Length: 342
Image (cartoon, rainbow, N blue to C red; front, side):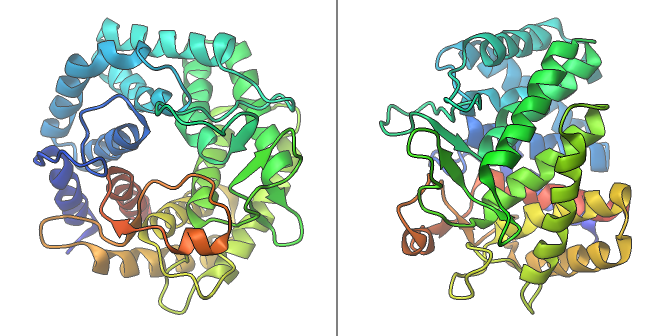
C-alpha cells in the first residue's frame, strides 16, 4: 500500500470513528484531540481530499467556544491546526480562537523559576508545579512561532524561541545526547531521569518546525549543534527491526509506535533541510516500513503507549498500557507524509 493510501486509511479511522474512550475521542478541546486534528490537517495536505478540511471546520464550529474553558498548555494544542485552517479558509472565528489562546500563553500562562512555560493540563491533578515537559514545545510553541511569523509579531517569535532554548538547556542530557522527559525547577532534577521516546519525538519535530519558521534568534546556533548530535544519537538508538523503544536507551523497554513515528517524521524533516540526508533518510524509511505493520485493517495504529505523565522511574514507563490513540494516528500520518516528500 502506498504512503498516500495508508495516510487515508489512518485518517479515516479518526474522521469516521465514533469513539467515546479517552484515547480516540476527538470531541474535546485538549491535547490528544489537538494532535489528532493536526494529523487530519497533514492528511489533507498529503491527499487534497476536501472531506478532511470539512471535518476540521465542523470540529471547529462544534468546539471552538470550548477553547477558553480550561486554559492550559495542553488545551492550546488544537489551535496549531485551527491556525492552518484559518489561513486556508479565512474563517475569522478561527483566528480569534487562536489569538485568545496566544494571549493566554504569552500573558497569563505560569512560568517556572527558570522562565520556562510550566506544563499545565486540563485535568484537575496536583503535583505539576514548576515542571517543564518536552511536550510543551509541540502543544504550544510551534503555534507561537507560526502566528508570530504570519502576523508579524516579533514578540511572539521571540517568546517561542526563548522557550525552545530553555527546553534545550533544561532537558538536554549531554552524556547520552538525548532529552529527558521533564525538569523540576525547584528540585533542580529531571524527576524520573528517563529518556522517554515520545518526549524526544516531540522535541525533535518541534525544533525543526520552529527553526524552519523563525529567522535568527539568540541561542539558535547552540540549538542546531545539539540537534545534530541528537539526530546522530537517535540513529544509533534505532533497533534492528527499525523501531524505537518506549525508553530510547533501554533495550528492555518495548517497541513503541508513536515515538517511532514521531522520530521518523523528524529524521525525514532534518534530512530535507539540514543535510546528512543518506543516513537520516535510511533510518527514517526503515521506521516507516516497520510502523506500517502496526496498522490494523480498520486503520487503527496499534502499540501506542497511552497518556504518559512523568513517571516515577523507568519501570513505570515500561508498564504504561499500549493501545490506539489520536496522537498515535497523527504521528503515523506525519511520518508517512514526510516519507512522501522524499
